[in-house]
Length: 433
Image (tube, helix red, strand yellow):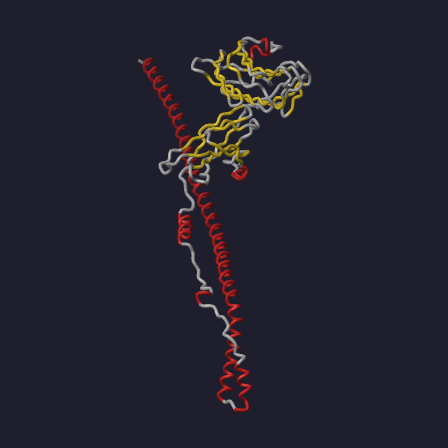
């Protein structure tokens, strides 16, 4: 009986302990949820205060500007009215002075005629002959009738604009949904938030980047700069420093509306993958943080990437800064990690290689394909992007001069790869990113 009691007690103690452990885990989750709710409330209050401050500042500045503009316009109109009055009255005053002088002379003539003496008859008639003709005086319809008119439609339009000025958004119409680290880059993706108030189509998006974490350091907001404008809903932001946080935000422009929408919630992210770069090679001049390579002798050895840097989900772009049109050979492509250190000539490769020749010829595992890409020319860009096909193979998309080809390469999707290049003359120069 004692043994059974002991076992029962042990079982009970274990159940209690397990329950306590589950309760502690549950409590941690509740605390995390409470923290999330606290952060959500703080975000609402903070953005509410910032929004009210922005509204007050905007309308205060606008009131000042409008008063200045109205005062200025009032002054211009008053000056115009005064100018018309002055220019119209001056000749009339001159004419009136002539008329009044003649009136005075005529009054004198009449007075002298009433008291004329026979001895003064000749003098009177001589003065009468000087009366002359009447001066020409304009009719009322010929002189200015100064008035003021303000176009009612313009006034109503201005009132309508002011009545509908500004907009308070519950949430910005475009929001960043995902960020993925790439070598020396971050792929930023966004989408439209469902909003019944907005039924018009989106015309363009605008992505901005700022150095640092703007959520922690609000003063860094002034560092936001455009890095993309266009219709796409994702963009690969390049030339980033590994381990350095960057802030991103996005806005959009609705069809038929000139202004950009409010900004999305800022998102902070960093990449820990170093940028694509070439390995040091005695046969090449390497520059620009090992992104640019130029052969310094003919028939140079194979130029390898600085390690197996290419993985599934990555995309890489080769740019030909200089080319040799005298029938010299050039090859770029990818090779798997297991064969990279055992090869000396790319043309002789069989398995584990995906290569493009200078004439656009494609070699997959040593087999020439029927599809041909444009031949290499100065300024041309050739890009490789990768994903996993339904068959489990590595799917490669190659883009060159607006032409795309797609192949399912018979290598494992988790394979690590080197990107490579080989040139037969010194007149080639290549950039990778």
